[in-house]
Length: 286
Image 1: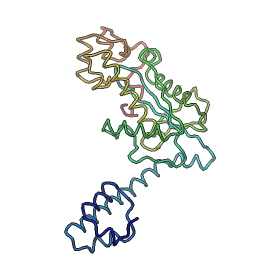
Image 2 (image 1 turned 30 degrees about the vertical axis):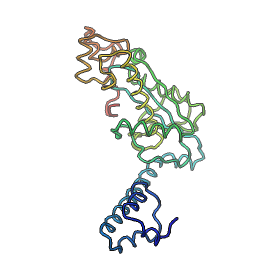
Image 3 (image 1 turned 60 degrees about the horizontal axis):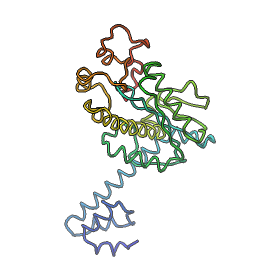
Image 4 (image 1 turned 135 degrees about the vertical axis):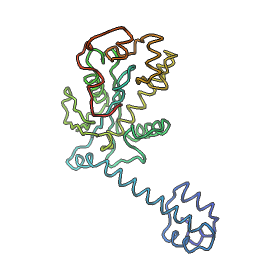
């Protein structure tokens, strides 16, 4: 590593590139030297570097906090802890998709959070690829529209989660889930309210589930053009409901969901009993 004296011979543009853009480690004494440097902009650069360091510390603290459930289980001797979450409860079309992810002990990924908090689709895809590369194991499972209509959305979501856990290839020692537990799963498990925002493993699963389902909906858009599936991902937007009314109901539409049933001319209660959209009340749209 270059000495502070050598670095001060560099232009401020070079130092900005190295320590702000490339986020390289900052040698001891450099910030103090920049704050004493008479060059215009040196003090501003020092403030920018200190700001970056502060953000890095805050992100590190946030990620450590997100590992508190996993850390407790690791300390109890559990090695393979699977986080599980799903995406696609609310849409009128397409499957509900679940994912399971086992992260290495102490593993962190900058920017990883509940998928609902990551608005940028490209960033979600980048995080999903990083999770796949870094995870001990990961898998997805799904339940299609026919299963959702037959079982109801809650039970179909749990079925997709169970399939994701079964597909891992490594049996977890413990399973962490967002809010619910899987009745058919015999492994030790815990449902954490708002778990996708409180557990890094569940957050990783939420990103995998969301990106997988979005990709499936883009593929279905190519198969069924004119419904806008790539744009709204099957959710009940005004344009989607209008397309159903004008173009008809597709095989991938959930017939037990009210807008689809109405387009089919059905009246009365849904065949599966409860109104599908109310089966996950309070857990947030996914």
